[in-house]
Image 1 (cartoon, rainbow, N blue to C red):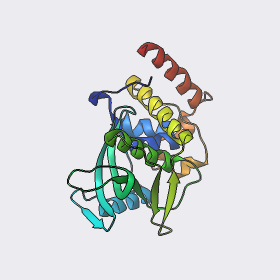
Image 2 (image 1 turned 90 degrees about the vertical axis):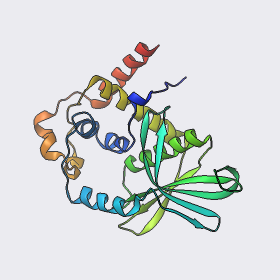
Image 3 (image 1 turned 135 degrees about the horizontal axis):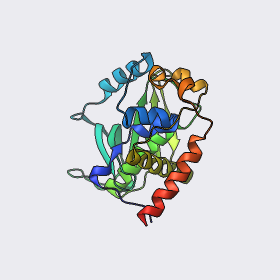
Length: 227
């Protein structure tokens, strides 16, 4: 049985993308509260400012579009905001206050660039869907990305493997946050993409020890402590 987190233990959902990209980057931002902006982060922030209007709701026939939707999952221990949630009329959906019929949920995440070669975007969108599932007692089969650089949507199927990956990452985040740990750097080409490169100083702080092995060891220890 998975752990249920309390309000005091909730972590920012947006951090799961940072954590998937680099656990050290996540810890610098969410444990040490450090941040530096570069062109990519500035462009991403501006895109989200245009999308995130919590008072915006639009009906398009059988689709209701809501922006800046608050999210929480006590199973993941995460809270955050979905850029857009589309409610699509469906016989397999759930009821909504003040709306007739049944509605299926579809989170839509806006991104500044283009699809990534890794899974950092996928785990963030899947985490949003898992929050909605828990909040509304429903099942969500897919979400969508809108990538600003290519100007089109890209669908994401929410597989069991991806869902399990999100739970694993969230557990690792909680272990490091509770212990106040910032992992050592693992230098790679993706360091050049990081806005925190000057703060991180990866070549000066790297260690031969594997971050993933460290996380696996301490997650197991945390699970034993919770029993």
